[in-house]
Amino acid sequence: MPTRPDYALLAEQLTNQGIDVETVKTALKAQHIETPSWGYANSGTRFHTFPWPGAATTTRPKIDDAAMVHRTTGIAPTVAIHIPWDRPEDGDYAAMAQYAQARGIAIGAVNPNVFQDDEYRLGSLGHPDPGIRERALDHIMECCGIMQTVKSDVLSLWFADGTNYAGQDMLRHRKRRFEQGLKQVYPNLPQGARMLIEYKFFEPAFYSTDIPDWGTSYAFCLKLGAQAQVLVDLGHHAPGVNIEQIVAFLLDEGKLGGFHFNNRKYADDDLIVGAVNPYELFLIYNELAGAAAGGDEPARTTAHNIAYMIDQSLSIEGKLAAMIYSVLNCQEAYAKSLIVPRARLAAAQAEGNVLAAHRILTDAFRTDMRPLLAQVREEMGVPADPIAAYEASGYEEQIRTERGVSVATGGFQ
Ligand code: PSV
Ligand code: MN
Image (cartoon, rainbow, N blue to C red; front, side):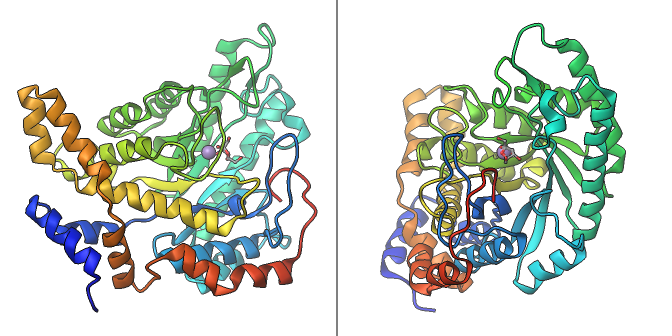
């Protein structure tokens, strides 16, 4: 395979800095980012959903789209499903898994949905009525069964539960109901599978949310056991929160299980990953890469077992090219984190040389890794420029013609 001239230059520069370029390339080739089935469907805001021509409405086209993203990037081999959005009409989940497999991908995380039915107006596992709590539990257990069938090892839990008004419910009782419900789910996880508990500080509940922050999620996970870990969605924090510090803490406790990558400026904006703050994304990857390369346990093992998932829902920019861009932005942030000279950084930190340490880190962030990424892609047999390749592939025109414009009904359809 011919070496790209811009790559040769960058490789030389990195080698001179003591970085083993082949190790960096090997790590990049092993990267895995999961895309969400709902990211290929029409979605919008509470003001309007603009239908996108060719957007998928059912699961098979969503799987087709996820497979296309994998074919163009080489690092998105799984697709997360959300139940009931992805419930097959005939209930045949094995056929769904086979359909994905035939297209070169697999089903990833299974996401129960205990927020869209009218019964959940006052919550699911936190609901004051035991009957509704039971209904939510049944659905989550159903998802554990689906995991067995599709061979998924991640149950991804997010709850919209909370209250809108002070006095609406007893906050302490809601906490206990959650604890009880999660404890009932935990033993039903398929063998070797993990339960990831996502937090979110507000929305749709506006006064209190039952799992508002990583600390609450972490406390529940501690009580549940080793197979319960925290999921960090980048859009689920108050402005200014230092997410990389949360990542570092959870890694060090062995309790970081996964991510929902997206980007936000104001709240849970669900934008293209790295679109607003690529530096934050780099700093998060820097914590992960540092832990993965270091000798500390359980951080090291934990960092090697993270479920990296995208959770974006785009309303004005089309689906696939934007999804590819998100995957590429994760790849670029990861690449930059892999070239942080850890020994030099540690030495500057130990000396208390604040500026040197900061510059070592920011130099890595400022390094243009795109020539190396193009080389890695060529070596993996995928296009050097995935977005250009997608645009030239004719796929967008094909799905427009075949699928047409669906009526956007809200939700993720
Ligand atoms: C909630 O905002 C969330 O981040 C959860 O992960 C959901 O499963 C997903 O978005 C889709 O609604
Ligand atoms: Mn999420």
